[in-house]
Image: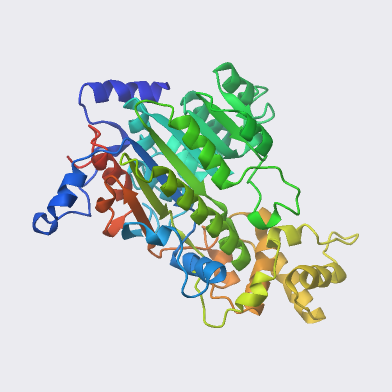
Length: 477
């Protein structure tokens, strides 16, 4: 148990209200006594033994509609849409009406608004505790899963604190080690390496503390059900669904990671808290990549189905499914050429890796034409290629410069196939790389799910979970 969690446990045992979930204004979402039915009141009196929070990063209503149409057609339904309770959620951060993932994850995890690029601290830089900390201090097992790196944004906000998400990644990895989290699964293996940790192999340190370790799908399948589990399946982000086959990746799916986590965490007699993030919905949306958004959202949605099936009939589990923010203002525009987009089978990032450079370090016209034709069935003119190359030079976006070529490829494809998405120039000027302030969906089912109705703020989420679970540190009381 970390020092942070030990302190919290002492406070819980004495009934004190401390940490990041304290001193916060009351819930914006309230219940009118006259409208609450007797069976609902009875249900609200129960406390979930297990809580599973599932975050679709960047997954706004447009991303959901695009995925639904492309997977099931206009009369189909996503799994998450069929959960018992539905709400909308505002996402603004302390210093901007458009949040980044760090501030959004912090608000969801801690009920504290913070500045963009901050992790697990308030707007003044003070460390705050997360809902994961509260559950851990109450004797429950805890876990984090992400197809991102496990040291980035959403998982980091639940398990660590850092003034800046970009410069603090190495320290976040050390904090995850010190936090005694029972299950950690995802990408980001490079941050645990001796090269990043001043000669210390953090994976070996985890092993010394009794963690089983898995580095690929086969190892995860064969690891059994240990008491503690660390799985790091890629040096950086895990592969896009579209690229797994092309890159010959042997990493597990989000479904497989989640199933293993449920096996491990459910061994605990007192229950557990688990956060599951489908992170690459956001990354695909940044590139205006409709096929990527489709595939990543469907994998996330299928994982929701698996989790709900696991929880079905148990009567002891709360499942909350939500987004942290929306990315690129994506919409299912009437003009969108769905069938043509379905034919694209790799990500813009993969396409970017196939471009060839000349002796001056410039992408060749022939390779640009060839890549667009082979992978997106788009014939570019010489003028089109010249504009594409100029856009790459001109795009001086403030975040993710390593992805600008892929983002430009995605924007060309989106424009050609008439996708509803904000312009590449707006993305370049955005400090978040194209996030919007649009409200996002929240879906919930299970014990306490009736609390998730109406219009919420992102700081309400952990408050409502704490209230449902009858934790002694319920905010606002």
